[in-house]
Length: 298
Ligand code: NAD
Image (cartoon, rainbow, N blue to C red; front, side, top):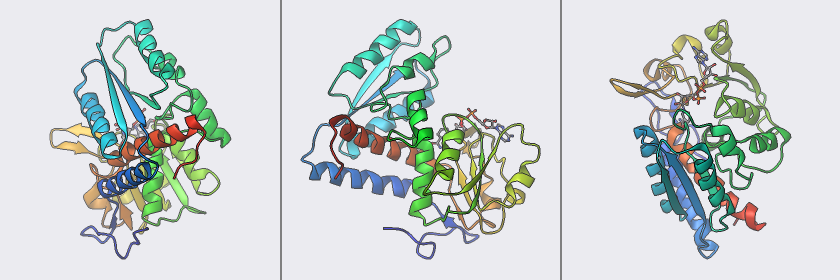
């Protein structure tokens, strides 16, 4: 079912409110129904958290809770922040070797002194449900089956769900990380989505000039209220990925109040891309189970 702009909730300024919490709940319910229909196989997401960073603890706890809501199993591996690199790699390798574990998520960033790259490289593409290591990225670039990083996948799901046309449209992605910006550019530009994509970053000379003709703007810089009304064309779709923690709470890259008056569709922050990231992690884990078993999803 696709919510059309005429039936979706709108902001005060009339923009379609792209509700990530609602879409996450729909996706989790759909996953649960599929897993029920398959006779409730045990599909396990393992999360690895190193150290005691509070936001990371909250993210990981929420991932475990939502996995259960989706009908998945969840296993948590909590490790001390002063763990040796070799011991961390041994813990992750044990999950790789465990046939009852289908998806593995290593919560990033790791504490200082630990190198994430060799840890992520241990994950076979089937179990790399975050889609972040070089083999998963290579598959994305080559158009081969594999897991797509959860946040950009979530953005694509929001665009599809709210019927936002991407084909032939001009999109600007702000931010070039391997976690969000780069895979987002690939997903928007690949066959099927067919957008013409510009990648903006901290060295972009004039961000207003770069954005002002865009049909779709995706903010993933992590700079509070970077994107203002002057960046946005009347009728554009604006998606906020950035998260900045301020004294007033979580703030996105988008100045929501100003931009919603010009945009045709907009995500809130929080409540937009964050919940979608979690929903797509569950979808990737479900897909991982079928990739590993060579079976077809319901
Ligand atoms: P990052 O720090 O690795 O990358 C930030 C990018 O923004 C860089 O490529 C940089 O060039 C660009 N940038 C910085 N300042 C800029 C400016 N003034 N103008 C244009 N570009 C600028 O961060 P990341 O890991 O890609 O995450 C980006 C943001 O998204 C962070 O706030 C992060 O917390 C958030 N995030 C949100 C979700 C979610 O689910 N909503 C998931 C992952 C990350």
